[in-house]
Image (cartoon, rainbow, N blue to C red; front, side, top):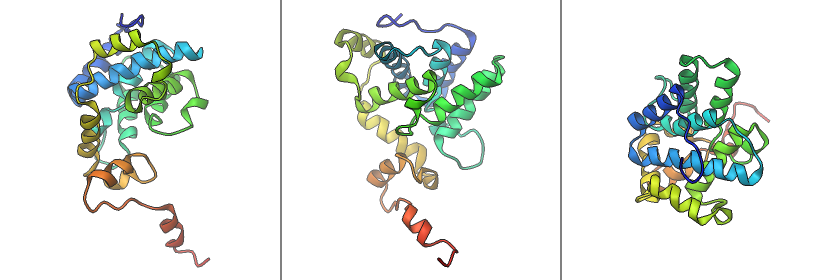
Length: 209
């Protein structure tokens, strides 16, 4: 129990936690833990009621695709993480609907605007990410609860470490960042990176008109 929020202790939740520890490193493990906790706190504020176990699994695995590609195919890291999460749920006997719900929560966690219109587990995963990554909603949260979360899962040099993790996880597959916020990171940190443009794609298409 941290800041009044219970941590799920099911076999699937433990497996998601172990996966995050093994594949993302301490900085992203603590970030993922805070995403769950901040997400639950924001959910209470907003009257949302996500399934705690599904939310925990989505939160713990949402960045796992940065360093553990699911397959040899180049795809957005969010999709790698979503594929890992779906497989974990299937391996633990969850049904297709629950597995797809968590898949969507992970796949959409960096997508602006859309998650808020979807199921609570998807919306709250996104909310937790926004609180921890950019501080959105932090000013409305109870300061003691926030302090308790950060004491349990320290931020350390989070801003710099978080951005560096994105560089390390995406620099070798830059084309997967097209049309996403991830291209912002590479444009800032990777010399010579040219972000893709929809305008260039439309004007450069094989159509004559």
